Image (cartoon, rainbow, N blue to C red; front, side, top):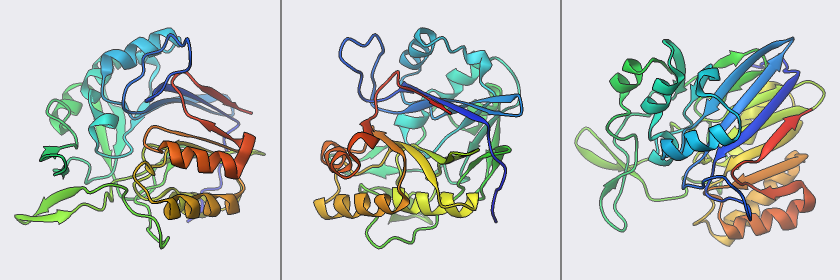
Length: 293
């Protein structure tokens, strides 16, 4: 399967992220959210990728950035964690329309928890369950398959895990048939934009599937090897130095023009990425705007 269609333009605005720049007016929070405007032959779609965890801060940043919730055409939830999904029902109510596509993996509403430092559910919270989403105007598109949102813009679907050094990045658990089991985060999906004369842009939430695995899947789906850029969280914050180094080395083989990584990426991984890519790497921050071309 190769998705050959291409976008003419792509604009990415970071409306929530853990960090803000010096003297920035924006509100930071632990989480991530992107506002994506994709254009092909005069047709524009505005996609919200994740909603972080504080909808009041998210909406305040949107207001300062000149983004109106009513302009959102669809929402992509990259995985279940609260710092990407909390408040989705509130945001849908602000959009104020019916049948807004909410795209995610079918396992996204499962129990997902940690035990360190104590037992705590970290998945989708009360108030954002399927009924809440649908009552607020959302229509759930739950699939393991890649889903085309418009020609040239699609999700990865469930990512194939092929790299030997990548893993989920933290100790997560779920319960299946009354048994506690490690949670492999199979619901981790990303967004791919295939841009004319530029290549692929990957927008990821936390990369629990492994950013190298995601890059492999993106190039396979787009039917091309050229990655123009990667933006999001890489969840290397607790990774070993060996895994961090192997990740940077593997990404160099894709030769991206730019990488913007933050949120759960971690300082050591950001340093390694900077040393590997120099001026092609920039730490992610709230309020950042990338326009292609």
